[in-house]
Amino acid sequence: MGAVEQQVQAATATKAPLIALLGNPNCGKTALFNRLTGARQKVANYAGVTIERKEGSFTLPGGRAMRVLDLPGAYSLSAHTPDEAITRDVVAGLRAGEQAPDAVVCVVNATNLRLNLRLVLEIRRLGLPMVLALNMVDVANKRGIEIDTARLSRELGMPVVETVAVQSGGEKPLLAMLETLSLATPVKPHPLSAIDAVPVEETQREVRRIIEACVSFDKDTGNLSEQIDQVVLHPVLGPVILAVLMFLVFQAVFSWAAAPMDLIKSGVEGLGAWVGSNMAEGPLRGLIVDGIFGGVGSVLVFLPQILILFFFILVLEDCGYLPRAAFLLDRMMGSVGLSGRAFIPLLSSFACAIPGVMAARTIQNPRDRLVTIMIAPLMTCSARLPVYALVIAAFIPNRELVAGINLQGLVLFVLYAAGIVSAMGVAWFFKRAARTKGQHPLMLELPAYHWPHLQNLALGLWERAKIFLTRVGTVILTLMVLVWFLSSFPGAPEGATHPPIYYSVAGMLGRALAVIFEPIGFGWQICIALVPGMAAREVAVGALGTVYALSSSGDDVAGSLAPLIAHSWSMATALSLLAWYVFAPQCLSTLSVVRRETGSIRWAFVMAGYMFALAYIASFITYHVARYALGS
Image 1 (cartoon, rainbow, N blue to C red):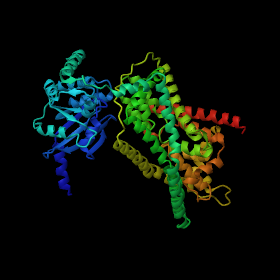
Image 2 (cartoon, rainbow, N blue to C red; image 1 turned 180 degrees about the horizontal axis):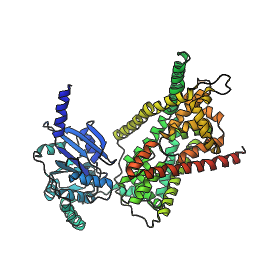
Image 3 (tube, rainbow, N blue to C red; image 1 turned 45 degrees about the horizontal axis):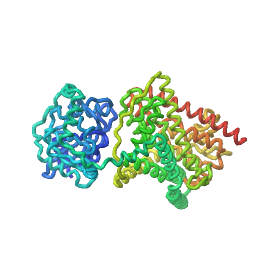
Image 4 (cartoon, rainbow, N blue to C red; image 1 turned 60 degrees about the vertical axis):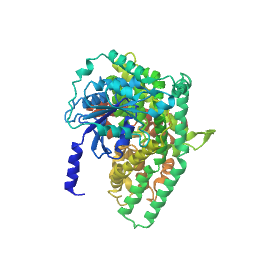
């Protein structure tokens, strides 16, 4: 395709009408966006904020090109959160540099119109061309909820179409309706005062009137989700079920991952040995065998454990359980000054603290939002998992305590629990420091339970694997080459009594840092690994692989790292390192996002400072208590 043709296509896309998709959370809006656009979508951030902006393109059956914008979920245009403020400003044409939409598609959950129609009525007052997408009609039909679509269209004064976003072809009625819209003349939205002019009580009365006129619940068989919730949300059984689920997840991380990890380890060892045997001695051989295979291979082996952890998180999210977990934890979180709404950002932080910090913007109260941001990094992100798995495999026996309960999985569960408990403790401290009293009530929609969609699970796991492998092939590989270079030069002097790495730049840096970290049991090799770990925590494992490969014969690769550290470290040092990583100071990219989300570099420094202090104190106590207990 020539440059001129590409410019013509870009200009045509820019002139294409812009459709805004908006609706309540959990209404299927994003699924409909994905169904419309497929791979033709781009993700960026709105100017001046870190809120995600998703825009895509599609073609109507008649051949007309359209652009579509997936706006953040909102319950009302009377914004209470940053997400809702973005949605309000975009649809009202108030964001500088942002084009107001030519039309609005309001997506609603057909089984919960009572909650969804308030937003529809508010948007209608802006005077923009509108289409109502009555989504999840298949679920409504199964329950026996009868909706008079034609009457609903007359009552609302806008076209109404039935969609099933999770089914192939479920978007076709919407495409046919958009074909009939006349969007040649742009319509300027009415001022937001048109919304505020109508009291909320009047809007709710109008919602009830429309539902009574258009919806029949006479044949409604009831909501199976409500029956399940009688058990899942039980004040006694509910927390027990949640604890058992989380415990089983961490057991599976070790038991299920054993076979694929052994396969990857054998492959890396075999490939490294083959490359080493077919290359002449020299710096290039050292770089490939010790730097790449000894470093990157040490991280790559933990991919199965990360994917298993995310498999369970995605299943629980897709089936609708996670909002229930937020309700179960609301009372406990309220006791330390948080809302149960903080549960979702904190759970997201188990993947990575960055999306967890960004997800905190859905919390209405500014103080709760700030505290959630500050404690999100204490959740055990996936980057810590390789470090945990390495140390646990090296020092904790692979022994079954009772049927189905493995000692290694139990230790991993305790480490994750320690992160959660410490986060609650820090939140309590912030509450006391701010002298905040009272608890903000939790208002959260509980979606209906449903079987997880295999396509969503596959896409989610593929995205996670792609992110991890991209980091392995870019950030981690680059840092491993840098660690190898710093660990290899300058060479050992004449008559040296230590391995060459001892005299290298990395060795000098490690010994300098060891003065600070020696009281918590860290030798200079561990200190070397902590430095690149500031860029990405899992890099510490690769750095250890490189350091110990260069400290030994030079033929060791990823698979031999665990027995190497088991031979080199004491149990007290291993436990101290685990304690360090429960609180480990956050990576630089997370600190950058914290600065942007809070609007101040001050809170990024506060986060780094308090986490370093907690990590050092916890490691110091753990190291010396372990030495005393073990008599070493």
